[in-house]
Length: 136
Image (cartoon, rainbow, N blue to C red; front, side, top):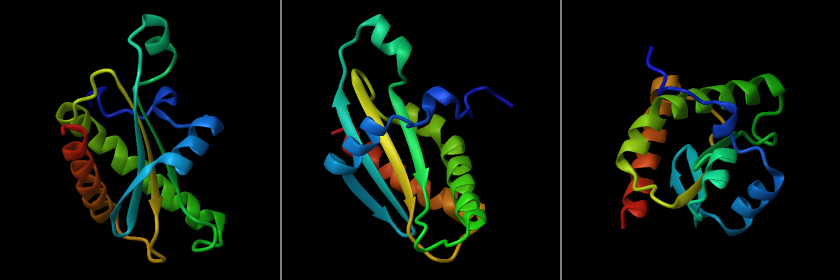
């Protein structure tokens, strides 16, 4: 399997500061049952800055109000991560990410869990909408 289909530690949105900034100032794309919250920020192209953090970082979430049991939340998050991992190379090849830092957060909003193929299709649709916004 090629190494382009990865979701490594540097690709994960873990910083509390960045996550709070994402939820406070980010824009949203809704493709039911996925809500994509994103921010696009310019970055200065220093070698030290690019080596420490990734240009594209993503996080996933499932509300505990909808999914009361942690097992259900973890399954939904696992399905979202896998769908993103498979769609990320296509997104990177289509999007113009030159001197831009993109933070993404995928929220699952439905109470019923879809199959992996359906979630991947919805996530692909949300990312294609984001590509058109990035390329403008």
